[in-house]
Amino acid sequence: MAFIGKPGDRVRLRLAQEEVEGTVLESHEPGICLLKLGSGYNIGISADHILGGEVLGSAPVSQLPSVVRRSSGKPVIGMVITGGTIASVLDPKTGGVKPLASVEDFVQYYPALFQMVEVKVIRIPFKIASESMDSEHWKLIAQEVGNLVNDPAIQGVVVTHGTDFLHYTAAALSFMLRDLGKPVVLTYSQRSIDRPSSDAHLNLQCAARMVIDKAAGVFVVGHATESDDYCQALLGTKVRKLHSSRRDAFQPVNTVPVAKVWPDRVTYTGSFTPRHTKPCVVDAVCSDKIALVKFYPGQSPDILDYYALKYKGIIVEASGFGHLPVSESGNSWIPLLKKHIRAGFFVGCVTQTINGRVDPYVYSNGRELIDAGVVFLGDLLAETALVKLGWILGHYGWKKDLEKKMLENVAGEFSERLVC
Image (tube, rainbow, N blue to C red; front, top):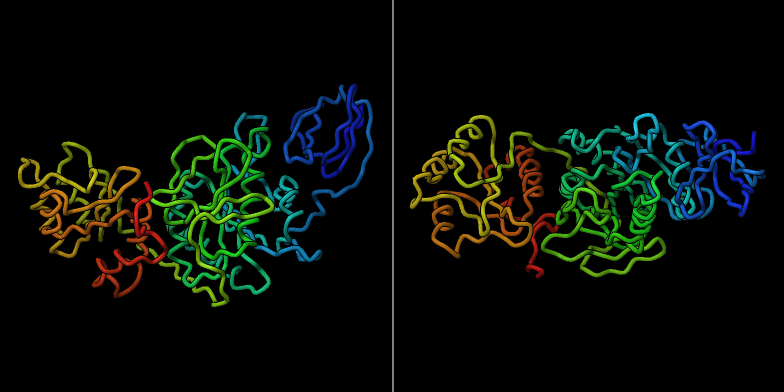
């Protein structure tokens, strides 16, 4: 049988017309050598095409540490791994992806990251798809991150996450990590690490670069374009996934990117909070008695009866400037809005357009809703508004100041001006 090495070996393989170097990965297909190249991409080579080779170095996966300690003077970061495509590989049996089984697997598949930085501690609080997360998972991530950023030896934290609901977690961490003086960067991949078109390598390296730079706060870092040229850092409260599969799916809303990020540098394009040494306070509370309701033409206001019975408040995605049917309509929402808001039920209003803000003073419709007690939330994103409402309601005694606190700019969630 032709030489193919064993998993963890760094090898040079001799083929018919060329030589290739890389690290041998575990292959689930008989007769195929899976090799990670220096570029970070993986290739599969049939054993029949390998004429020979040599081992250049060896680092068996079984001997890789689960906690990577500082040894080389590189910048030190922490990591929290929660699952998602970035922590998954192809399962040749099903054609889908499966989670990386261990920290050792993560180190094996992402060697370039560990050449850039030292990872002092890796936490894996859970490994689930982002659509299965709830506020309890946000709290757990916040606690893990808080412990790491308050370690003086750690410059910041990378959080790997599934893409579909990453922006909810980014918003939650933005509110739950108070006085944050270091970068906390959520990153992702749309395509698993073993695919040639994977965005995982660049995203993770750029996330690490942002973590060791000079800005403090919660950011999402990922591809800025479909090409593998650079990433962008986006504020955790002003970002949304705008495409189901593109590598540049995450884009800023009503603001500009905080920075352009390459594996070796950061160029700032927006305002940011500089690092500081004040301890981070983990304020991980959240009420689940909230809901996000999207208004559609003809929707009955009776839906308010249901939510007011079971919940403490809702965020309504209304039309453009924040309109709902009012007095001139036979389907007016005004009577039930007044009834439930007067009884202590909170109704916040955001726009269901991607960009722009609600404004109750453009048309009389908005003024009627204001009079009914609806709170217009400016350019707050719907997802961010929902998370913020849950976070505020999770605090004992805050409900009496709910409107005031919802309109307070806590984590950059409101833009001072709109970006056209």
